[in-house]
Image (cartoon, rainbow, N blue to C red; front, side, top):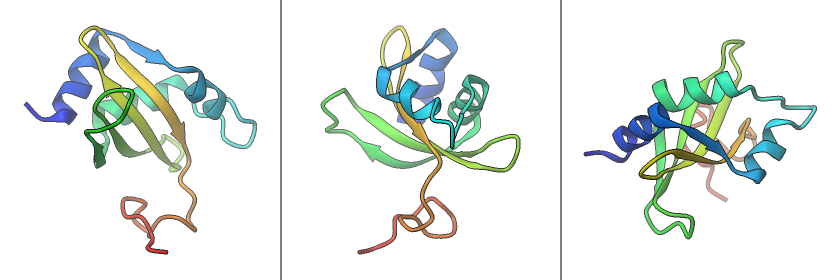
Amino acid sequence: MTLLHLVREAAEKKILFLPHAVRQMSRPDRMIRVAEIRSCVTTGQMIEDYPEDVRGHSCLILSNSDDGRRIHVVCSPKADYLAIITAYEPDPAQWEADFATRRSE
């Protein structure tokens, strides 16, 4: 079973927003809605895998919001829920035009 499949299975049970995610989502210059996060984890593309994350195996998912913004969500599937670690609009200075590939420094 792939990690993305585990993410989507966990999201069907429950989504838990960690404090950092809530702070990032509620920034006035960003305002990412819960519905956008749900859409991202259910339809988005996994672009990075973090098997050694201290919070548990996690990944970075890319999606488009309803209004065309790109959104990145870092999440970790658990037995009973999906933990949303953070969510943000990716910075074009740090990502290639596809927002799926990090720019090399």
